Length: 102
Image: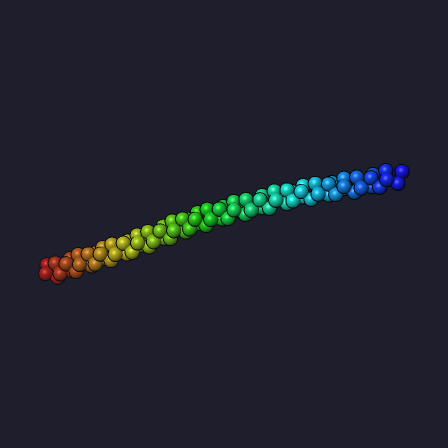
């Protein structure tokens, strides 16, 4: 009777140890899955951040190029206006000279 009780106790302890070991393996497997998922998410987030930065850089360069083009057009228009004013002044002086002669 004592031996049977002893055997059952040892079997229960063994079963308990097996259950604990199995649960530990399950926990480790779950932790590994979570860690891998987190690493994957981190890589994806880093890639998305990189793409966003590239897109922002492209937008900034495009915007700066547009500003540069506008400034260049203004500069060209200013030059044309000065040329026109100079030409108009020259024509007016020539008219005045002709009027003075006549």
